[in-house]
Length: 56
Image 1 (cartoon, rainbow, N blue to C red):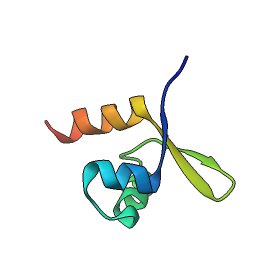
Image 2 (image 1 turned 120 degrees about the horizontal axis):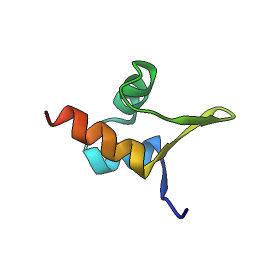
Image 3 (image 1 turned 45 degrees about the vertical axis):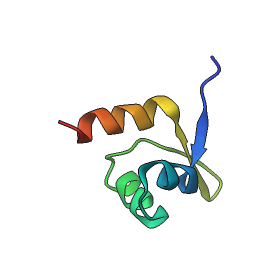
């Protein structure tokens, strides 16, 4: 499975929001992420699910 994985900064750039807002979404469990060490990674499918939920 070749799915893109994004950093919080990349997601922030895509959504045109501040990276701290992305972290807040992760902490609020609105956006699913994987924590690797101290850094979060977001799968493309998780980002798409987040966008689908927020657009309704």
